[in-house]
Length: 192
Image 1 (tube, rainbow, N blue to C red):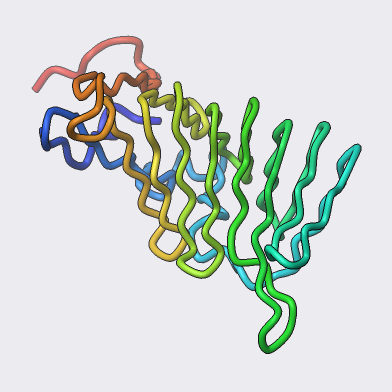
Image 2 (cartoon, rainbow, N blue to C red):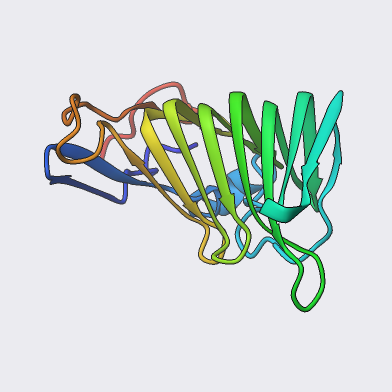
């Protein structure tokens, strides 16, 4: 990432810090070859979800399937891994997964980026992924950490909060991050 890579927005709202996480597309054209544009922007949430796990329990009357034991769920270029995933589904007009709730070492991967947290919720209808609990988002060489990540697959916009929800026992907190600065080829700053 270049030195021009900036945090797009930061605001204090109800005791928590929010920041928009810059897209890999914001990198200069020269660096785009080393960091692929996020495949999650415009991700097809209607694509089939392939999964494997050590165990499945289907609770058909409740409209849910509980996957446990090294769960891996893949949809296009998006991969979710966790200890447990609960898939909520509806049957009208045909069986359709509406939501995936993941817990236990949740990792969501796409080309060039990885998000990690304690819990994850993937709303397939709204096309929004929410992760909570010591969340880290790594995009190529940039890393951002906080308490909660909301990723909108429609726009590719990711927002990281540093603290809990208003009124929670931990409403404060900070978003932290690290960006790699490209090195100049001349080894020093240019003089006018």
